[in-house]
Length: 261
Image (cartoon, rainbow, N blue to C red):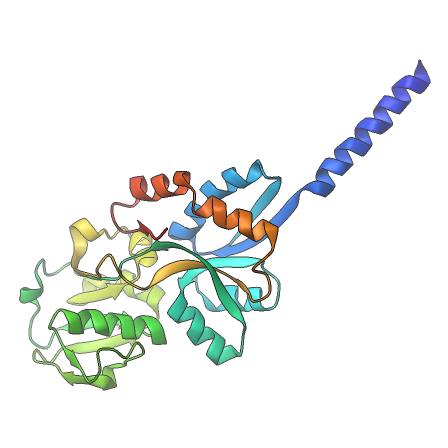
């Protein structure tokens, strides 16, 4: 009897160890809002596949890209393709987009005006200073007739590319994460969706101008080139593009985040 009990105990330990060995861990970098929140929904889907999703939070997009490039992370979910491509050029990296997940419409927010016609002459507008979002912000102003760019097809325009500025606006680039906390100091601020949500700004209540729903700046899951056929990554994509994630996005962000799949 003792031998039987011992065998059962040993078998149980072996089975338990085998289960642990089978568990796959995926490390994915993400910004806290909304990317980490969306990943938590996907994580629940992945549990049934024997995959544990470890979400690593970041406040910027440079470090998580460096971590993916250096294989410290399996993927990240924090940016759109133009930003990723700019990073690849700067750092000679080989990051690629694995899947489109959502769009965060870029918007001009203000606590001082409710209509763009109220924008005062000589007013101050803050815009993101990274190459892709700076150009994206200027295109938003150009499309709505606030300024005129030399070339409104150029995605990496800077304030130096402004051809006409009828209201003589002071357009100030700064780090994207620093803009929302200063919104009360200026006439308007063009803010990325994740930073707007983090600072309790909503499109319905605070936005004066908003990007079209067909914006090409979808947020994507980014991986290192060569990992396209990784089965765990494929399962993560399936989970992120599931009906459950779609419903979560549509029910929780009031249009500030839109499914892109």
